[in-house]
Figure: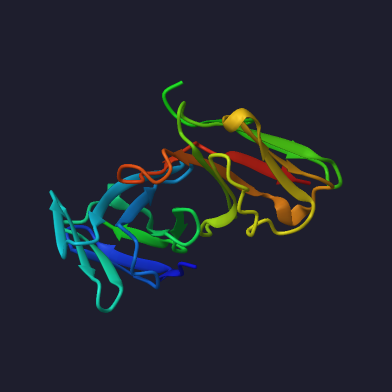
Length: 112
Length: 115
């Protein structure tokens, strides 16, 4: 089945760019996702990328997809303290009834 | 309601007691997931329901854990003889299955504390 890996922790200063990385094993996932979890809340979809795209930009967010290396990244420009949260990448396991599989989450801490 | 609803939002129980956690998914969503999240940790997959297919129970940590989904809608996660290590936030999520972008909608979670 799908295996999704992320680094656990990232600390940046306010105004810097943040880059959160993710690797996955199942290349058949039609979409790849980034979810954000703020303290005490459930997860919310932040952005997603279709598998035939290399890049998707949405305001301060840039998603890069390298299918050859099975590598997904999320770049947050001009990181703000409100961006402090846990970020999860996820892919679809097409061999398990289209079940979403999440990485372990990257905790982003933004220092003022 | 418009979103995924979970109850109770908080549950404190004594070790050895049974607990039931409820999830009411978004109407029409065929897929339903349960996850567990311990303090400051990532998501631990527990169980996945998709339509009328047999559920994927591969994430359930022990036979004290069980879940059912009645009528393809509401789901109940039951933990028998609770242990302190069961303390966590239990998250439920649903989506429309394989259609669309596959976006998963999460409830706010049920925080379980086992004393």
